[in-house]
Length: 145
Image 1 (tube, rainbow, N blue to C red):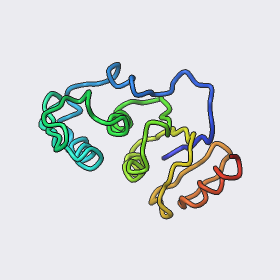
Image 2 (cartoon, rainbow, N blue to C red):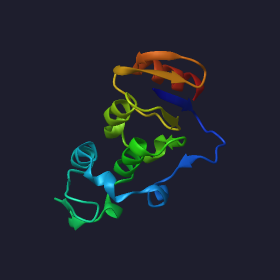
Image 3 (cartoon, rainbow, N blue to C red):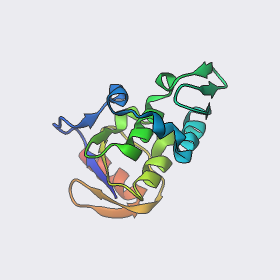
């Protein structure tokens, strides 16, 4: 389930762009979904964590992947942390929703993050709004902003 906290939250368990190094395991890059995320978000092909082919940069390592891609990969494997919307572009929304079908995700919505109208999963906000509609989340966000 996707749990959205709207606004800032005092929390020591917030994942940042630098957190990837602390959690990263080589085997993550063997997962076909990780390869799909890298292809979809960064338009690159991953053969391993050491060898990723970017059409823009040529051969790169995982360190050169976007913050959104690294955050999505961590969502798949790291438990009990909060993920800030500041590290994700709107192009990550479908993957956040997809990952939340099989894992509980805590998502701090600190800016106007655009989810699709039909979410395909149940989402609960910090004020208890339970919805499957992205417009409800935006309405909740706008009322507080």
